[in-house]
Length: 107
Image (cartoon, rainbow, N blue to C red; front, side):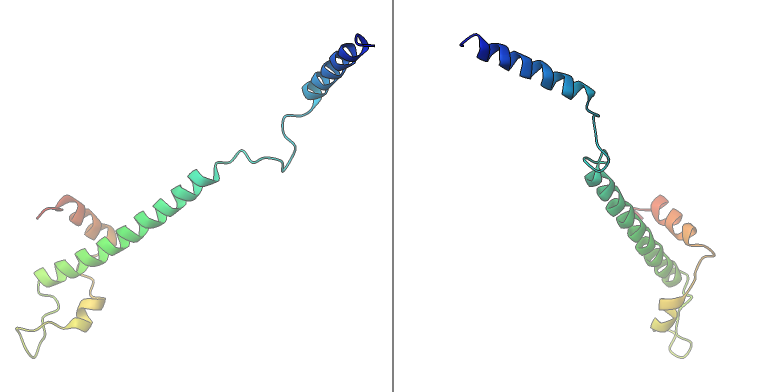
């Protein structure tokens, strides 16, 4: 009787190992191979970079408008027209602002 138990356990082990070998590695929907944390982090960083580029372009646009005195008030020459400063386009394209700001970062 004691011989029968180890023999039965051996049969169960071989049967289970055969089952594990024939079983597909993954069932559909069982486990995702996509690293969601990495993709989420990438999307957040891309959105942050996009927002920073927009903010840099707006700040450089206003800085260039102030430097070239595009928004100087017509009535009071020593004052600024703040409404003009909000909507001014001191260069033709946004990427010119970003490029100038990145190249001349310290000055």
